[in-house]
Amino acid sequence: MERRYYSNELKDKAVQMYLDGKTSPQIAKEFDLPNPDMVRKWVQIWRKENSVPAENYRRSGIAVEVDEKMRLLNKIERVEHERDHLLMTLKLVCTGDIEGWEELLSFMKNKN
Image (cartoon, rainbow, N blue to C red; front, side, top):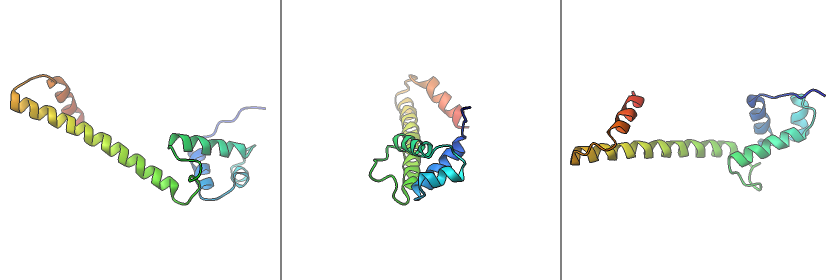
């Protein structure tokens, strides 16, 4: 039997349908998958990647919550990065210390 590969888009759609309440056999039939276990495997991978506990992953809206959590974590990371560079700039202005100057210039170039 030839091994088939499925796009991430198809996998994401199948996982979302499962989270919304469809059964894995229904999804497998709809996407012409040879085995419903594939859907369960994709859901398991999604749960691990998004740190979703087993008891809550099938409730309504969980995917939206996970997306919002990821968006907020990315925003926190970006804000912390900007804060660090502002502190370096403040240190430079207050002390005249050039340490970190190249890193600051690099950050400013990337921002534009």
